[in-house]
Amino acid sequence: MTRFKLFKFPYQKGKIKYRQYLLAKEEIKSIKEFLNSKEKILHICGKPGTGKTLTIKHILKNKHYNFYNAYSDLTKLLSLSIKIPKKLTIIDEFDILEKNHKKESEKIIESFLKSKHKLITISNYLGSNENVLFFKPYTSEEIEEILLLKFKNELKNEILNPIKIKIIAKKSTDGDLRKTFDKVINELAGENEVNIEEESNVHKEIVKEIVNRSKKKNQIELYEIYLEKCKELKIKAYERSDFILVCDSFD
Image (tube, rainbow, N blue to C red):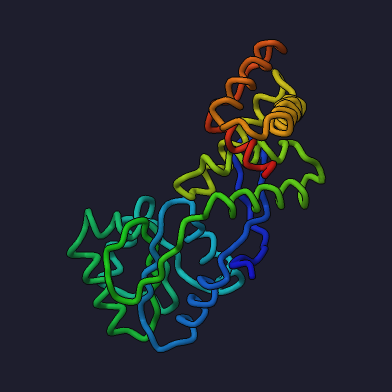
Protein backbone atom coordinates (compact mmCIF):
# COMPACT_ATOMS: atom_id res chain seq x y z
CA MET A 1 0.00 0.00 0.00
CA THR A 2 1.56 3.30 -1.10
CA ARG A 3 2.19 5.94 1.54
CA PHE A 4 1.37 8.69 -0.97
CA LYS A 5 -1.59 10.46 -2.50
CA LEU A 6 -1.58 12.61 -5.64
CA PHE A 7 -2.50 16.31 -5.78
CA LYS A 8 -1.65 19.37 -7.82
CA PHE A 9 0.50 22.29 -6.75
CA PRO A 10 2.95 24.43 -8.76
CA TYR A 11 6.71 24.22 -8.47
CA GLN A 12 8.59 26.28 -11.00
CA LYS A 13 12.15 26.94 -12.03
CA GLY A 14 13.04 28.43 -15.39
CA LYS A 15 10.40 27.49 -17.97
CA ILE A 16 9.48 24.10 -16.54
CA LYS A 17 6.54 23.79 -14.16
CA TYR A 18 5.85 20.67 -12.15
CA ARG A 19 2.23 20.44 -10.98
CA GLN A 20 1.84 16.98 -9.50
CA TYR A 21 3.30 15.92 -6.21
CA LEU A 22 2.93 12.86 -4.05
CA LEU A 23 2.11 13.56 -0.44
CA ALA A 24 2.54 11.23 2.48
CA LYS A 25 -0.91 10.08 3.62
CA GLU A 26 0.20 9.48 7.21
CA GLU A 27 1.39 13.07 7.62
CA ILE A 28 -1.81 14.47 6.09
CA LYS A 29 -3.88 12.38 8.48
CA SER A 30 -1.83 13.53 11.50
CA ILE A 31 -2.18 17.22 10.58
CA LYS A 32 -5.94 16.91 10.08
CA GLU A 33 -6.25 15.13 13.44
CA PHE A 34 -4.39 18.02 15.08
CA LEU A 35 -6.70 20.59 13.46
CA ASN A 36 -9.72 18.76 14.86
CA SER A 37 -8.20 18.21 18.30
CA LYS A 38 -7.92 20.37 21.42
CA GLU A 39 -4.15 20.58 21.03
CA LYS A 40 -2.87 24.15 20.57
CA ILE A 41 0.53 23.64 18.94
CA LEU A 42 1.98 21.25 16.34
CA HIS A 43 5.67 21.31 15.44
CA ILE A 44 6.41 19.96 11.95
CA CYS A 45 10.01 18.97 11.32
CA GLY A 46 11.94 17.43 8.44
CA LYS A 47 14.81 17.92 6.01
CA PRO A 48 14.46 20.46 3.16
CA GLY A 49 12.53 19.17 0.16
CA THR A 50 10.32 16.72 2.07
CA GLY A 51 7.10 18.64 1.34
CA LYS A 52 6.39 20.19 4.75
CA THR A 53 5.17 23.63 3.64
CA LEU A 54 3.60 22.20 0.49
CA THR A 55 1.55 19.74 2.52
CA ILE A 56 0.30 22.40 4.93
CA LYS A 57 -0.78 24.71 2.09
CA HIS A 58 -2.57 21.85 0.39
CA ILE A 59 -4.50 20.86 3.54
CA LEU A 60 -5.44 24.48 4.32
CA LYS A 61 -6.46 25.38 0.77
CA ASN A 62 -9.63 27.53 0.81
CA LYS A 63 -9.32 28.05 4.58
CA HIS A 64 -8.47 31.23 6.48
CA TYR A 65 -5.13 31.29 8.24
CA ASN A 66 -2.10 33.49 8.87
CA PHE A 67 1.16 32.44 7.24
CA TYR A 68 4.52 33.86 8.31
CA ASN A 69 8.05 33.12 7.19
CA ALA A 70 10.84 33.70 9.70
CA TYR A 71 13.03 35.23 6.98
CA SER A 72 10.62 37.58 5.21
CA ASP A 73 8.11 38.34 7.99
CA LEU A 74 10.39 38.77 11.00
CA THR A 75 8.93 42.11 12.17
CA LYS A 76 5.37 40.77 12.07
CA LEU A 77 6.47 37.60 13.84
CA LEU A 78 8.09 39.46 16.71
CA SER A 79 4.80 41.27 17.32
CA LEU A 80 3.04 37.92 17.81
CA SER A 81 4.59 37.65 21.25
CA ILE A 82 2.45 40.68 22.17
CA LYS A 83 -0.78 40.06 20.25
CA ILE A 84 -2.05 36.66 19.06
CA PRO A 85 -4.11 36.66 15.81
CA LYS A 86 -7.65 35.30 16.02
CA LYS A 87 -7.18 32.45 13.57
CA LEU A 88 -4.89 29.51 12.81
CA THR A 89 -1.27 30.63 12.43
CA ILE A 90 1.55 28.96 10.48
CA ILE A 91 5.19 29.93 11.05
CA ASP A 92 7.60 28.61 8.42
CA GLU A 93 11.35 28.35 9.14
CA PHE A 94 10.53 28.47 12.85
CA ASP A 95 13.95 27.04 13.77
CA ILE A 96 15.51 30.26 12.40
CA LEU A 97 13.29 32.36 14.66
CA GLU A 98 14.08 30.08 17.60
CA LYS A 99 17.82 30.37 16.97
CA ASN A 100 18.03 34.15 16.47
CA HIS A 101 15.17 35.30 18.74
CA LYS A 102 14.81 32.60 21.36
CA LYS A 103 13.05 34.72 23.98
CA GLU A 104 10.44 35.99 21.49
CA SER A 105 9.85 32.50 20.07
CA GLU A 106 9.24 31.17 23.60
CA LYS A 107 6.75 34.00 24.25
CA ILE A 108 4.90 33.13 21.05
CA ILE A 109 4.59 29.50 22.13
CA GLU A 110 3.41 30.49 25.61
CA SER A 111 0.86 32.94 24.19
CA PHE A 112 -0.69 30.34 21.89
CA LEU A 113 -0.84 27.78 24.70
CA LYS A 114 -2.96 30.26 26.67
CA SER A 115 -5.11 31.32 23.71
CA LYS A 116 -8.06 29.69 21.93
CA HIS A 117 -6.21 29.46 18.62
CA LYS A 118 -3.80 27.00 17.05
CA LEU A 119 -0.20 27.35 15.91
CA ILE A 120 1.72 25.15 13.46
CA THR A 121 5.48 25.64 13.21
CA ILE A 122 7.57 24.30 10.33
CA SER A 123 11.29 23.65 10.82
CA ASN A 124 14.18 21.82 9.20
CA TYR A 125 15.68 20.94 12.56
CA LEU A 126 14.00 19.73 15.71
CA GLY A 127 13.74 22.38 18.42
CA SER A 128 10.98 20.88 20.55
CA ASN A 129 10.22 17.40 21.84
CA GLU A 130 6.50 17.98 22.38
CA ASN A 131 3.81 17.29 19.78
CA VAL A 132 6.23 16.86 16.86
CA LEU A 133 5.32 15.50 13.42
CA PHE A 134 8.41 14.35 11.54
CA PHE A 135 8.42 14.31 7.73
CA LYS A 136 10.55 11.44 6.46
CA PRO A 137 12.86 12.12 3.47
CA TYR A 138 11.81 10.58 0.16
CA THR A 139 13.58 7.30 -0.61
CA SER A 140 15.29 6.88 -3.99
CA GLU A 141 12.53 4.43 -4.98
CA GLU A 142 9.84 7.00 -4.14
CA ILE A 143 11.67 9.74 -6.05
CA GLU A 144 11.95 7.44 -9.07
CA GLU A 145 8.22 6.68 -8.81
CA ILE A 146 7.36 10.39 -8.64
CA LEU A 147 9.52 11.31 -11.65
CA LEU A 148 8.19 8.45 -13.79
CA LEU A 149 4.61 9.34 -12.87
CA LYS A 150 5.14 13.02 -13.65
CA PHE A 151 6.57 12.39 -17.10
CA LYS A 152 3.82 9.90 -17.89
CA ASN A 153 0.87 11.97 -16.63
CA GLU A 154 1.98 15.50 -17.51
CA LEU A 155 4.17 15.28 -20.58
CA LYS A 156 2.83 12.04 -22.12
CA ASN A 157 6.41 11.43 -23.14
CA GLU A 158 9.61 9.82 -21.92
CA ILE A 159 11.76 12.93 -22.13
CA LEU A 160 14.30 11.16 -19.96
CA ASN A 161 14.92 7.45 -20.33
CA PRO A 162 13.75 5.39 -17.29
CA ILE A 163 17.34 4.26 -16.73
CA LYS A 164 18.48 7.90 -16.53
CA ILE A 165 15.67 8.64 -14.07
CA LYS A 166 16.73 5.65 -11.94
CA ILE A 167 20.30 6.97 -11.82
CA ILE A 168 19.16 10.48 -10.83
CA ALA A 169 16.89 9.02 -8.13
CA LYS A 170 19.62 6.76 -6.72
CA LYS A 171 21.94 9.76 -6.43
CA SER A 172 19.34 11.71 -4.44
CA THR A 173 20.64 10.36 -1.16
CA ASP A 174 19.29 13.22 0.98
CA GLY A 175 15.66 12.69 -0.10
CA ASP A 176 15.31 16.33 -1.22
CA LEU A 177 12.71 16.36 -4.00
CA ARG A 178 13.42 19.99 -4.96
CA LYS A 179 17.10 19.24 -5.57
CA THR A 180 16.11 16.24 -7.64
CA PHE A 181 13.81 18.39 -9.80
CA ASP A 182 16.71 20.78 -10.32
CA LYS A 183 18.90 17.86 -11.48
CA VAL A 184 16.22 16.82 -13.96
CA ILE A 185 15.95 20.40 -15.25
CA ASN A 186 19.73 20.50 -15.71
CA GLU A 187 19.56 17.25 -17.68
CA LEU A 188 16.79 18.64 -19.89
CA ALA A 189 18.70 21.90 -20.38
CA GLY A 190 21.49 19.90 -22.00
CA GLU A 191 19.14 18.34 -24.53
CA ASN A 192 19.96 20.96 -27.16
CA GLU A 193 23.50 19.65 -27.29
CA VAL A 194 22.83 15.93 -26.79
CA ASN A 195 19.77 13.75 -27.31
CA ILE A 196 19.64 12.37 -23.76
CA GLU A 197 17.01 9.72 -24.38
CA GLU A 198 18.79 8.37 -27.46
CA GLU A 199 22.13 8.29 -25.64
CA SER A 200 20.59 6.51 -22.63
CA ASN A 201 19.06 3.89 -24.92
CA VAL A 202 22.46 3.21 -26.46
CA HIS A 203 24.03 2.67 -23.04
CA LYS A 204 21.10 0.52 -21.95
CA GLU A 205 21.49 -1.76 -24.96
CA ILE A 206 25.25 -2.02 -24.47
CA VAL A 207 24.89 -3.00 -20.82
CA LYS A 208 22.05 -5.42 -21.57
CA GLU A 209 24.15 -7.19 -24.20
CA ILE A 210 27.18 -7.40 -21.91
CA VAL A 211 25.15 -8.75 -18.98
CA ASN A 212 23.41 -11.38 -21.12
CA ARG A 213 26.63 -12.58 -22.73
CA SER A 214 28.83 -12.55 -19.62
CA LYS A 215 26.67 -13.94 -16.80
CA LYS A 216 29.63 -15.57 -15.02
CA LYS A 217 31.69 -12.40 -14.81
CA ASN A 218 31.64 -10.04 -11.81
CA GLN A 219 30.69 -6.36 -12.03
CA ILE A 220 34.30 -5.17 -12.19
CA GLU A 221 34.93 -7.37 -15.23
CA LEU A 222 31.64 -6.32 -16.79
CA TYR A 223 32.53 -2.65 -16.34
CA GLU A 224 35.88 -3.18 -18.08
CA ILE A 225 34.07 -4.75 -21.04
CA TYR A 226 31.63 -1.84 -21.04
CA LEU A 227 34.46 0.73 -21.07
CA GLU A 228 36.04 -0.99 -24.06
CA LYS A 229 32.72 -0.98 -25.90
CA CYS A 230 32.18 2.74 -25.23
CA LYS A 231 35.71 3.47 -26.40
CA GLU A 232 35.05 1.50 -29.56
CA LEU A 233 31.83 3.43 -30.22
CA LYS A 234 33.47 6.74 -29.24
CA ILE A 235 30.83 7.62 -26.65
CA LYS A 236 31.26 8.84 -23.08
CA ALA A 237 30.95 5.99 -20.59
CA TYR A 238 28.87 6.02 -17.41
CA GLU A 239 30.67 6.18 -14.10
CA ARG A 240 31.06 2.80 -12.44
CA SER A 241 28.34 3.46 -9.85
CA ASP A 242 25.87 4.41 -12.62
CA PHE A 243 26.88 1.36 -14.65
CA ILE A 244 26.11 -0.90 -11.67
CA LEU A 245 22.66 0.71 -11.31
CA VAL A 246 21.90 -0.07 -14.95
CA CYS A 247 23.16 -3.64 -14.48
CA ASP A 248 20.91 -4.10 -11.46
CA SER A 249 17.87 -3.04 -13.49
CA PHE A 250 18.28 -6.19 -15.60
CA ASP A 251 18.27 -8.55 -12.60
